[in-house]
Length: 406
Image (cartoon, rainbow, N blue to C red; front, side, top):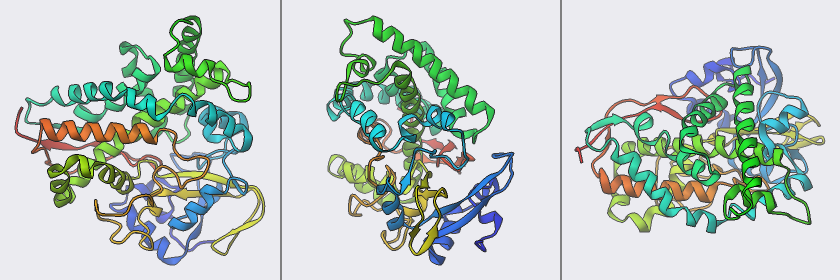
């Protein structure tokens, strides 16, 4: 067993209450690439669970991510074990592997294309301006609660055809889904989202003339003569809503905080926005790493960095730790828009489960910060952020800001 103290065990809630969990991960990386962690009973996991291997270095996270034959997703991507049925409901294609996953992903890729995202550009800009304009005259506000909290939700809901009056409830359910740590509340929230999605899918099937809608295109898209069922599309809807709302809001909110910690990088970006935007967005995503971890399960006896891993063992990829790995990123704790592209694992470490929504997330961030710097050029953080207590999303619950009223 590992000699890391329980307070340095990322399975327990206390780990994420530390002032600097990054330092605990840095200690792990310095010692070795792979650590064993028990899963004791806690308020997050009342019944405890099987322990798991934590992969904390960049190269090993990439290797495991790309080897789905040895490290599969089909038994779940969460820390806790679920039944196979619950695993499929909770993750949809996220918790599939091999040919089944490839088939579902191929269908979605035919609909969620770069062209689809580009067609949303005007919609993204309209919603970004609305979120900023509603607080512009105040001079101060909470960046998370008042500005960015529902911005990605509006985009996802526009894409999926969700009526305006239903969006607030979806945002609320998503918050429960990503912060409830496997509790009954999470299950209930997920079931409500899926049930709502089934209704939307049924209406999309009835409106055959609306062939351009995203859900309608999903219903008719096929690969090798096979389509996704209505229920599979509803589960995908839940996945897209939960992933697309919280992670982008987290990236923008934490990105604003990062720019306050590294003002020279902000000055560089504001002085040459469009030139630096692609690299700035990638570096913000690396620095933030909105999704902290995903799990895999070993399909056979194997080794990671010399550590024996038994068939059936849970293997957890700590993306946030990998994106702070000193072996790959010089001054990894710093925000640096001169950093080379393409090394971070915030969208996954490559392989078949690379984030489907990466193109949309990049577009949303690029447009939002452009509008923010145009409308409120001197906006600055005016107090300490309050973090979401989570082992899965690196989010902020609150971020006070001030600016010259516009």
